[in-house]
Image 1 (cartoon, one colour):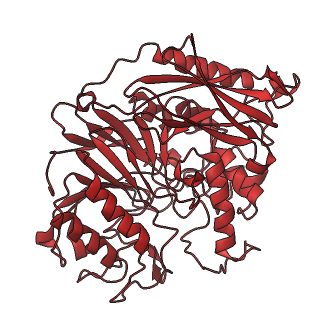
Image 2 (tube, one colour; image 1 turned 90 degrees about the horizontal axis):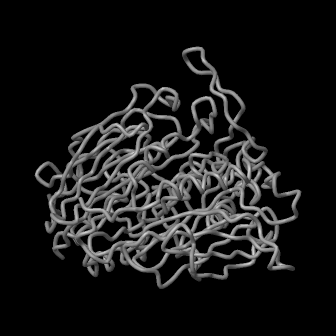
Image 3 (cartoon, one colour; image 1 turned 30 degrees about the vertical axis):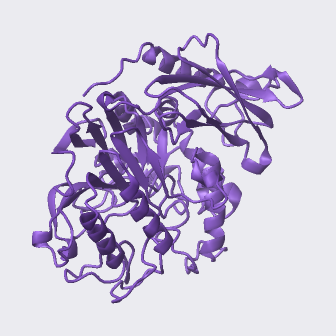
Length: 520
C-alpha cells in the first residue's frame, strides 16, 4: 500500500503532548490549574478532528471559560504563514465546547492545526495553543486508505485505570497511522456508574479514576456531559484525538442500555423514566463533545455518508433513533424495523449513487448475531433460522437491493457485542437466498467488559470464520479480550484487507477482499 510520507509527524505528536502536559490533567470541573491563575482560557481537554473529507474537516475544542475559538492551519508544523479560521464563541450553552468547519483544504495532504482560545472581551489575550494534525482524504486512488474501528468505552464499570496505563488500546491504534478512526457506538456508558475500586476474580483490585458525574446513572444534561468528559481524562485518548480524526456513531449506552424511542423505564435507579427525555439530553451532549457534521443540520441526524476519495465511502447508520420497540421480533410485516423507512431509503439511494470502489456500511449492531433484551430482541436476528421476520425484513430488502442494482464492494463493520469475529454470509446456506455473499466484521470493546460470542441466526446464512471471545461474562480489560479492527485498502490493486487485532496490536485474523465484485 502506498502512503504519502509524513515529515515531522512524531514531533507534532510530541508538541501536542507537551501542550497537554503544560495544561495539566483536566479536573472534573474543567479547569486546568496552570493557566487558571493567568486568567486566560485553557483547552485542557485537548482537540479532536472529525468527518474529514478530501477538502474539509471539523475541529473541536473545549474551554474552561467563555472564549472565542480560533483555528490556524498550516502545511507544516512550523505554522509559517498560517491560514486563520474564526470559530464560535464558547459558553455555558454548549458546556464551553465548540466546533469549527475547515473548508477548501488540499486533498491527500497532512494538515497541521492549532486551536487558540481568546478572551471574548480582549482578543489579544489567548491561552496556550493546542495542536493537532490530520490527513485529508486522497483525491487519487493510488494513495490508498487505512483506517481503524472499534467501540464500547468505559463499560460495565471498567473505567480509566492508571495502574494499567489507562486506555492503552489507543496507542496501538495510533501506531498504525490511520487516516481516521471509526467509532461504532457506545462512546460512553451513561447507564454505567464508575466506582473507585472493583474486586477482580483472582483477588486483585481494579482501580478507577472517578468523577462526580460518573457516580450514578446519567439523567441530567450535566451528567451526560460529564460522561463524555470522563473519557477525555485519559491521556492516551487525548493524544490519539490530536493525531487521528474520527467518524463517530452512537448506539444504546450513550443513553441507556437497549433503549428505543417511546420506552418508559422500570429501572429503579432512574427518577426520569421517559427515555425520549433522556435521549434528547444525551443527543445534545453527544453533539457537543464530538465533531459530527450532520448533527449541526436542522434535522440533527447521526446517519450520514463520508466520501473518502475514489476508494472509499463510509455509510454511517443510526440503528437506534428510528427503530421500533424491542419485541420477540417475529412479526411477518415490519415497515419501521431498526432503521426506519426514511433512513433505509436514504441508504439505498446513497449506495446506488456511490462510485467508490469500497462501500463500508458502518452498523452499530450486527446483522446475524442474536443480541437479546430478555424476553425480547435488541438487534436484528431473533434466532429463528427461517425466512426473514421482524427487523430482518429491512435487511433482506437492503441485501436484495444491493444484488439487483449490482452494487459492488459492500462490507459491513460493527462492534456492540464485546468480542471480535468475522462472519461470511452465504445464500447457499441461508433461508433467504436473494442476495450476494458478503462479509461482516466485528471488533471491540475498546475498554469494557468482554463477553462470550453470541449465537448465530441462519436466516442470512452466516458462517463464523473466526471468533475470539471469553467463555465467561464481563471479563475486565485486565483479563484481555479488548479488540480493534484495521481496514487497509491498497491504492494499486484496490484490494481491501481487514485485520482483527488485540489491544496491543497483535493480528488475530486477516481477510483480503477483491474490488469490483457485487458479492464475495
